[in-house]
Length: 224
Length: 211
Image (tube, rainbow over all chains, first blue to last red; front, side, top):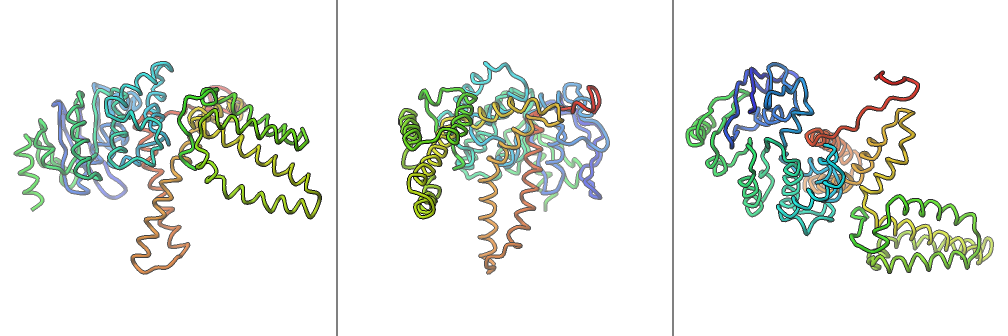
C-alpha cells in the first residue's frame, strides 16, 4: 500500500502541495487536475523522485526519507516525455539499464530483455537506435523499460499526452494489461472512467477523491 | 554516424569488445612503427576482407567516410610536391588503415560493450577518485543526447525563422542551453527513477571510510 501522510511541498516560494493525506489501496487509481495543480509533483513523491518538505510517503511501510532506493525499486515511474526517460542509444541497451542498476544476474538480463521486447511487440526494434523511433515506439520502450523491472506499483505521469490517437490506444492497451497496481496521471476522461478511483487536485489540494463518475463531475465543476 | 552499430552475427561481431579495442590500439600503434607501402596495403586488404566477412553496408560506410576520404587527396598531393609520392602513398594508406580499422570496430561493437571495456580499463583510476562507471555513463549520455540536441536546435531555428529572425548565434544558443539544462535535469530524474547508482569512489589519499 502507498500512504501519503500530511504531505506539503513547495518549489521556492510556490506551495505546490498542501497537507495531502491519502491511502492508495485500489488497483487502478487516476489522478487529474489542471496544469500546475500539483498532480505531477504528487506522482513524483510516490517514487521518491521528490522528498516532501513536510509529511511522509510510505510504500509498503518503506518511508521515502529512510530508504529511497528501496522505495524506487518498488515503484516504477513512466514519464510524460519518453525522450526524457530513455537513457541509452539502443533499444535493448536501454531496457537492460534498470536491470543492470538493480544488479540482476548477468545471464538473466538478456532473458528478461527478450521477454519484455516480445511482450510489448518491440522485438523487431531490438537493435534500433532510440533516437530513430517514432513517438509511440519511444513511449512503448519507456513503458517496457519500467515494466521489465517488475515493480510492485507503477506510476504513470501523463504517458499519452504526446501521442497520436493510434499510439494512445496502443499505450492504453498496455496500461490496461499492467498487472501491478497503477497510479495514472492523465487528462483523458475516457481513461479515467475505467479506473477504480480518481483523485482530483486543485491548487495543491485534493478537492475530490471518489469513483470516476463523481470525481470527473467535481473536476469539471472546478474548471468551470 | 550516431546509429553506429550495425547488427549482425558474423565472427567479427562475435569477437569480444575488449579484443577488438586492443587490436585497434595495437594496430594503430604498429602502423607508425612498421614502415612500407606493401605492408600497409596488405593491412588495408585484410581489413576490407573483414568488412566483407562482417557483411557491413559498403555504400553507407563510404558515404559516412566521404569527407575524410576527400581530405586524403590534398595530403597525397602535398607529399608529391613537397617530398615524394611513395611517402605520400604510405601516409594515405596509413590513414586509410586507421580509418577502416576504427570503423569496423565501431560498426561491429555495441556501445554498451565498448563502455563496459572502457570502465574495466579505467578501474585503476578509482584510486585517484575517478569513478569509471560515471565516465562510462557520461559517454553513453553524450551519444544519446547529440541527436536530441540537434532536433532541439532545428526546432528553435524553425521557430525563429517563422517569426522572421535570420541566423543569429545568440538567439540560438541561449534557448538551446536552457533546453539542454532542462533535458539534463529530466534525464537525471529518469536515471534516479530507474535506480542508477554509480557508487561512491574514494581517492586513496583520503583513505577508506571517509567521504
